[in-house]
Length: 113
Ligand code: SF4
Image (cartoon, rainbow, N blue to C red; front, side, top):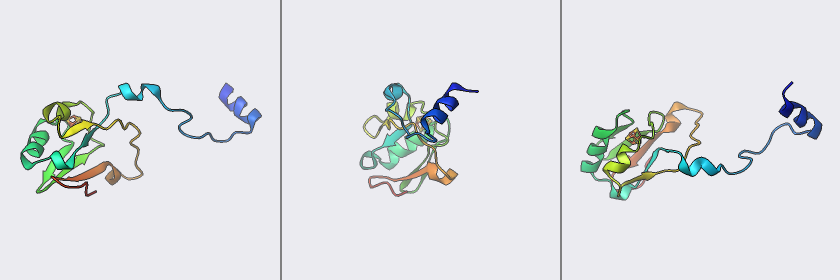
C-alpha cells in the first residue's frame, strides 16, 4: 500500500490544496506565448501565422486566433516579434472543453475571447 495513502488515512486528509506550494522550476519551463494586442498589426499577425510550426495560430480578419492546445511552446513567435509576443509563464493550461483553449486576440485591441 502506498505510503502517501497510509499517511493520509492517519492524518484524516482526503484532499490537499493545490498547489501545495509554488513550483520553483516553473520560471524555467518553456510556456505558451502571451500576445500584446496593441502591438499586433495585420502584417505581424500574418508573419506569426506563417512561422508557427504547429499551426496554433490563424488569422480571421482583425483577429489572431491562438489555439493553446496546439502550441508546443517552441518560442519561434517570440523570436519573430519580441515586441508583440512574450512568454506567458503559464503551464497549468487544463480546460474542461477544447474550446476553452482557443483564444481570440483582436489586432491592435483587447483580447476578445
Ligand atoms: S510558441 Fe511555437 S507553437 Fe506556440 S504559437 Fe508560438 S510559434 Fe506556434
